[in-house]
Length: 204
Image (cartoon, rainbow, N blue to C red; front, side, top):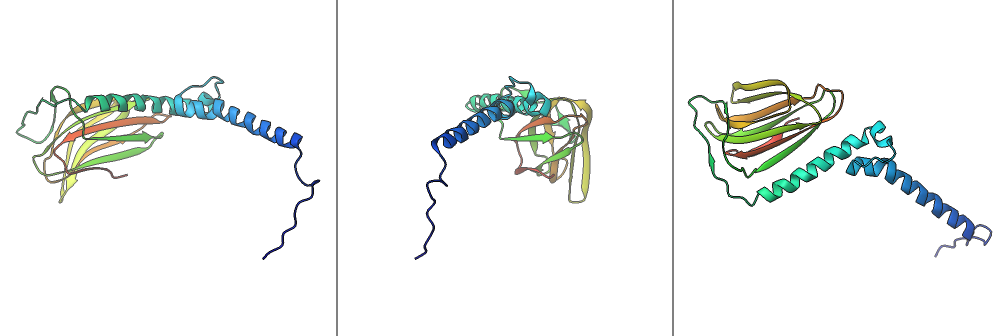
């Protein structure tokens, strides 16, 4: 057994000290809630500090994503009736159809100057429906494919905020998009895909 010294009554905090510590902790929590948590999580910035620190923009993006996730959930119950046209040469073509049930969604939070690449693993001739949108600013993009010693460029764009269509694999390999944020603030890219591919992955 171990003997431990019991604190004396003089060493114990008084009721006044406990109440004071509790009040300080409560005030600190309220300040953090108003200046950090509300702007960063919900885009609510009553003091204006969240905008200065860049937290309100983060909260606005999260709110938009939550709304879009709810919309996606509602549309997932719809039956897809699409008409994908075949093309003679591998390319990105316009999607002709009604409501799409998206199989995958990738969210890319791109800081100023940052780039990111998303690839679909596809066999030659397979088709994938896609749609992407940039929130908070325009981006540069390059739709391309590579694998088994082959490389192809499907489409490039600068200062774009959205794109959609059907990507047809020119050969078996990885086919997808590279996005670059040239703004001085963070931009969110939301990519939705569906169709004939084995896997979707972010390579970097």
